[in-house]
Length: 223
Image (cartoon, rainbow, N blue to C red):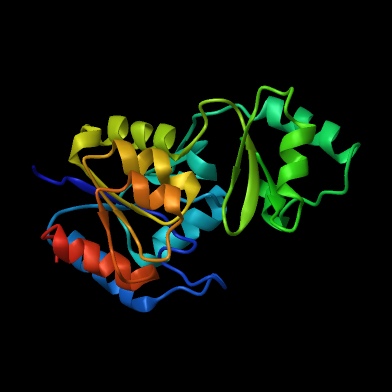
């Protein structure tokens, strides 16, 4: 199978758990691009952050932000989810328990991201009657529309790029990466990945973070 694009998560995959980027991972992804395979970021972060990272890393593929809610390519923005219901659910939630949004929610448009210090079980209990998806990573708790997820963003990426999901290699570490890891043609979970991410991936690297990405790229013959 010919891999025509690489899609890689950022936090915990290209970074450590303190969100510090490994330059080795950036260098490896640039090498992949010199072989004619564009690389995209697929992040739970907001578009301004993901756009800045992609630009300064020198990546060429469309950018998937807000867990797939927003996709950007060549200064065009495609909004995949609405985000109205998550905002209403959040307003209800904050009337029931103390919660705090991430600072980057000042620029978030399709979902709500809570600080990971919030009681996840209680968040789920309070919103059990709301038709929203609640997804937790090591960095945030996301309240999203049903069907909102990185997979939806990667599908939009494939449409923009004129390729199939089967021609994409995805890399990730967390539960919010499960959809794209399961559905893309090739997928790699880094060594520090969640059990759900490992179960969804075609290959689980024994190496953590960027070392796992580099290992996966080698295994796929992209380096």
